[in-house]
Amino acid sequence: KAGVTQTPRYLIKTRGQQVTLSCSPISGHRSVSWYQQTPGQGLQFLFEYFSETQRNKGNFPGRFSGRQFSNSRSEMNVSTLELGDSALYLCASTIDPRDEQFFGPGTRLTVL
Amino acid sequence: GQQVMQIPQYQHVQEGEDFTTYCNSSTTLSNIQWYKQRPGGHPVFLIQLVKSGEVKKQKRLTFQFGEAKKNSSLHITATQTTDVGTYFCAVSSNDYKLSFGAGTTVTVRA
Image (cartoon, rainbow over all chains, first blue to last red):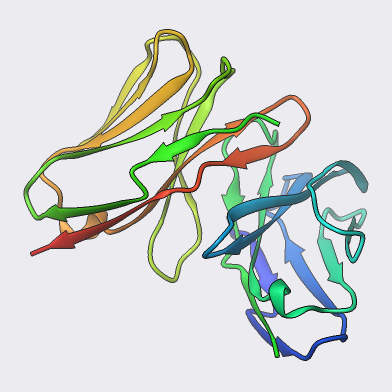
C-alpha cells in the first residue's frame, strides 16, 4: 500500500507571497492532519480534516488555512508569508486520529 | 489541549549503553503514543499505550505507561547507531488533535 505523499518536497518563497501544499493520504484513510515542525517550536498541530470537514484547528493565525477534497486529498495554504513560516510542513493520515498516524515526508518551506 | 513534557531534551549515549527518556503530564492521559524521527526524516509510529501500568517491548525498546496514566517512559538497552534520532511522545484527544512533546534527540558515540 502506498504511503502518504506530499508535494512539493521543497519550496522557496519570498515574504508576502502565498503557498499551497498538497497531501495525498493512504488509500482508505479519511482523516488528514497537518503539522508545522521548527527547531524552536517542535511539532505543532495545524488542523485536522475528515470527510471534507475541519474538525479541529491549532493556534495559528488565519493566514494558515486548509481544505480536504472528496477523495480525501488535502491542501494547506499559507498567505502573506513571513520569515517565521519557514518550517517543515508534515501531513499525516489515519483511520482514527486517536490511533497511529502515518506521516508523509514533508514539504520543506523556506521563506526569504 | 493536553500538554506533555519530555525529558531530557538531548541524550548523548555511548554505543552499547542504556538510556531512558520520559514523558510527563500534570493530567491523566487517555493514551500515549511514541514516534521516532530519524535525521532528515519524518515521524514514524512506534507504539501506543492505553492501559494503566502497561509495558510493551519491541526488541531493545521498552515502553511503559505509569500507574496513574500521567507519565510514560521509553527505555533503550544496548544502544546502537541505528537508534539515532528524535523520540517524541504524543497524546491524542477526543477532539481529533495529536499533541507532541518537544522530543528527546539521541546521538550515539561509537
